[in-house]
Amino acid sequence: MAAIYSLYIINNSGGLIFYKDYGSKGRMDTNDSLRVASLWHSMHAILQQLSPINGCSGIELLEADTFDLHCFQSLTGTKFFVVCETGTQHMEALLKVIYELYTDYVLKNPFYEMEMPIRCELFDINLTQAIQKDRVALLGR
Amino acid sequence: MQFFGGSEISPSPPTPTTTTGNNAHMIYIFNRNGVCLLYREWNRPLHTLNPQQDHKLMFGLLFSLKSLASKMDPTSADKGNLGVPQLPGQGCSFHSFRTNTYKLSFMETPSGIKFILVTNPRTSDLRETLKYIYNLYVEYVAKNPLYTPGTPMR
Image 1 (tube, rainbow over the protein chains, first blue to last red):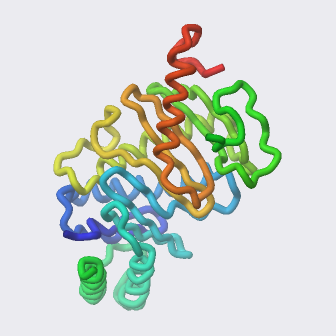
Image 2: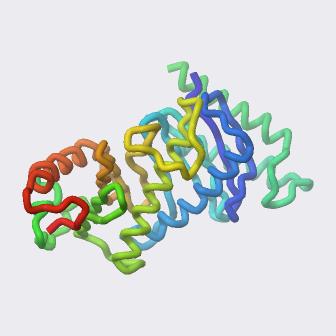
Image 3: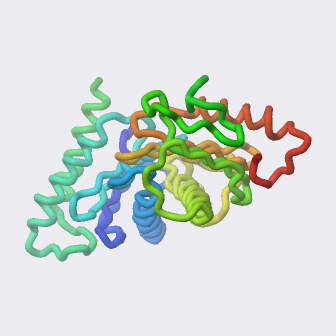
């Protein structure tokens, strides 16, 4: 039973650059995942407008009936978000780990073009390892 | 339950003299057509839009978020397309989201009335509070013979 259902990475213009599904019944095809990603990007911007207080940096957590969505935004505007089971703990830490992997394996890859879909093998391998470790840690309790 | 520091559906809520006992920033109530039935603010230092646009933005935002949540639902295999209006109760709906400066809690009743509460981010799950407010709405507003459904509350 996966704690994480899926992972999305959006560049700062709102385009989806990475989408990985870890075993949900609601698996989406490419077009749908692109739409959802750009919708999320716009939502993020609008929610900042609605804040009653100055200095809102964007949504961190969306709770729904059957899932939670945790979002992490880097300083450059790249957004990482995971869809997980309700009440999963430590998603922020996992998102930070994924961000580190992104900087190590994607940004430092000389063949990677900025803002383009991610096609880096090492990133995929290490990402799977990180998620597995997280899953094992969760189930091991 | 003195959550707001004043009675919720009075015509002019007392402005809070101290903000320490007061958790909520704003409350909105919409009906299913997007008419804002009630809007109260207790603590809103930043206004970005005029009230009409603000209500429209809030309603549109909730519509899109509900649509997004039902599309992203990982537990149901068959979903409608994005943008198709969902009936209340059909599909998965979100109940709250949190940013670093505020938390928004949302509840939709089967009749399409939407309750939105904006509070500070440390608030815990407010679904019970929203149910309580809905009960107040039913008691004092829906059962009021002088109230026309679909118009802002007085």
